[in-house]
Image (cartoon, rainbow, N blue to C red; front, side, top):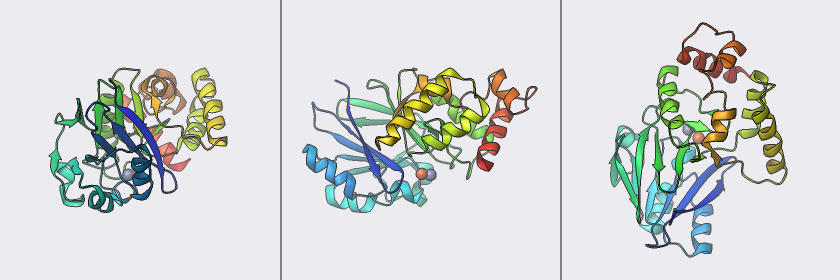
Length: 255
Ligand code: ZN
Ligand code: FE
């Protein structure tokens, strides 16, 4: 039985996610921008929170952890590398570690770049990856602490997951990300059709997250930095993949 997945809008443009194992009742949240919307969903579904999974230390991902942990007694999991700047951890994680939620085991992937210590959680049986501010819908996080080389290596790990994987990222930034992507690839048919799908969703105030990895591979300029057409679009035809990625990220920062 795959885990149930619920996407919960928080704050202005953040997402938290609940995963729930029906067989055991185990329920985890990934990131806690604020506690109240998550507690409301737990209550309406009749689920008891057992685990809190943290992707990185930014306030918009952890501000509600103390309140939610206090209300539920859930175990807290986060990166060992970030333990000094995260709420108290019950389980300190490094790449390759396992996180067990009910009957399903997830794996920790180091996706540093946005911050050093940012982790993603991959649940292969359910086909879910929680990427927060690393790989995002049609975009990627800003490089606050990591270099382009580090982020490019992190994105490569995510790009190698099965293409049907659902990418559960941390923000509703898709509209502006797609506007930027179209500026680089105005003729990309998959991107053009994604743009209209996203516009419709946002008109109805529906989340555009999660997306599928295959959708990201076809439309996300940061995952596509190694392709000749993307390199050409940013004037980096003779450059390495990581250099082309760096230039795409620089252009997005100024866009
Ligand atoms: Zn962040
Ligand atoms: Fe964030």
